[in-house]
Picture 1 (cartoon, rainbow, N blue to C red):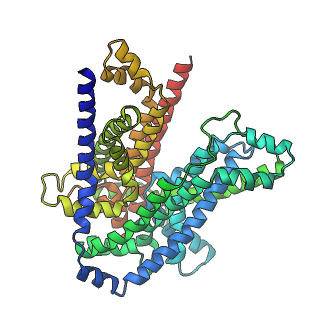
Picture 2 (cartoon, rainbow, N blue to C red; picture 1 turned 120 degrees about the horizontal axis):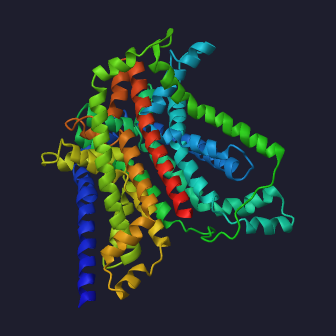
Length: 531
């Protein structure tokens, strides 16, 4: 009888989760797609801007993706396959661009290489980095850390015994790379390529800021849906932007994960090679400078009287930015981020627990819906929320922004917890039942303490991404209170470059501080557990 009741409860929970995701993801997307009519589709496709925008999007995205993946793979190999002493420092530095909005990278490029940029004036250059070069450069800065983390995660857990055997057999280093490393990285290479391509082709922050006369599909959608409030045309373009994202999702799910062992008998320990290690150090240092320059220019501009002609130190720009409402917008962002992080963390834990440790009826559907948001660009999800929730009680409130952010970033934290729970002893609940201890008590007293660091990482992931995102929230704010990240483009359009720099710097400081606090808490907890 108890087992029957437990099975019924599992079914009810799973069905409830499926219905929730259907309401928050599937229904909004269907409502957006339902606005597409043959005449509307024909009008958009035949417009003068559409085909050039498609071409620009594909050319810039493919170019930036190839560069980004190659740079990230080289950086990961330089850190984890050499004896680079400052590897930990460079690994932390390379993920710094993930903590600011994509539009901030583009703004940094304008400040450095625009028509009146610091480097432009210093070297006497003309024209500025607008158009193809600006979009590609900004997109590489924006997407590089994602691919780097993917390669870093897999290289850290590669088994070194295969390399030891190949070395004994006399296989040279180049042969080991092409015969062992590349096949091992095949799945990750494919996933990184499609993930980066999707990020770039659906982002409008970089091309909006540095695209110049070069319009991409995402900018065209933004201009139609936000600028002209033409949701029908925006829905058509959004459907086209869904195609590469869905393709990437299917390729990632269907690509077999071969050659990646879950058991590491001996970690890879590269031998010292002065020439190779020096080359790795020079490469990482050069890449680190490229990563730091946009951040450094924010600091210079904020405390400079008049960029770039008067370098006298001042706090005037901070005062002016706050007077224009930056403090209120910052409070909005903190509230959005905290709500999205709380909702997303709790929901992703429940979903991961139900799919990894219970696996009752509808568990596969819960898993599918949990990773579905990977296939939906933020700009498309934002427009679909405007169409579906317009006129509802939550439209124009903080709750709809928190909900769209939690759904937009749901998949990665869910997979974090799913993989973590899979490593926890699968017999805990069975032992608890034998001892008369209920499942909820086992979860509360045993499982939650074991996965507390993953919970912290999930919360920070939701919070940081919600603080800096501009894609989905740009459609919902206003009428909802505006988040601080949207002020960057507003200030840049008003030529208040120093204020835009201060907002970017503010977001970076908050996100870096939160990640640092999590790191300190985790290190102290691990030392306490070890002691």
